[in-house]
Image 1 (cartoon, rainbow, N blue to C red):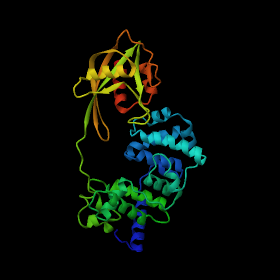
Image 2 (cartoon, rainbow, N blue to C red):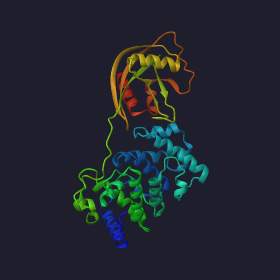
Image 3 (cartoon, one colour):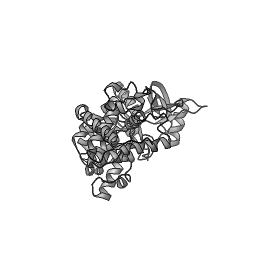
Image 4 (tube, rainbow, N blue to C red):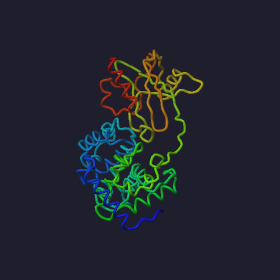
Length: 361
């Protein structure tokens, strides 16, 4: 690992802190040392831009102002408040984590890394953020912004996801984390990556660490960090059915442990290589509920991208044939009036279908 002298480390820390005190962002979770609220903000900020998170954070802590309040509520209410933010495993883990904190630590968010790492959804970097921001403990972090800052500072020209590179980055983060005022330092290094040391066109001329940055000195900042080669994104086609009966539509809740777990939506089935979209819909409804439908006209398509694949939903109006029993007999299937769809947490693609459905009805 690159050797740094104590006075160099202290100088970098102080320059970064002074820069932050002048230029740091004013964000709602920075007005508190409440470890629960910092935990919520850190989870929301995973995979999501700050500008998007702000409104969701404010709504979430208004609905669940404490870890006890979050633990008391059913998952469905939590998912409804989270709806639209995506990556729903984060919401499920927050909910499970809140219940664990209440049952194991009497509602006190732990102040040690060992205990924090026992909470669902909290990894080493999130634990470090909670410890440093809430408790002012000297704990390093290594989110995406900090990885980029460190790779450029030390001109690391390898993929930061590689285990040995990651180990080196953690060591560097730990060395640079001060023993005091760590609360300010942690916010400063986060903001440096978010506003100055950006992925594209970093603003090196106004960076407080530019004289320490090996990438800037060697004009490598646009080549670092090294990006892993991306594989082509798979694309899948699904048939989605609007199945109606006496003014109501059929919806289904997804299994809790899986993609979009716990969310409700319209029945949809993936098209098989040798079958048609209508085949997928008919066979799926028959296998799941024993329902027989006649698929009518295709009313539209909805496209959506997930992290590792893309989908196209082909939306069909479906006629429920007379011989069907309309009682599903399953708790995860319901007939509801379209006007009540807004009471259920829906995935983004299903919300698009809902909006079209309500506009048409």
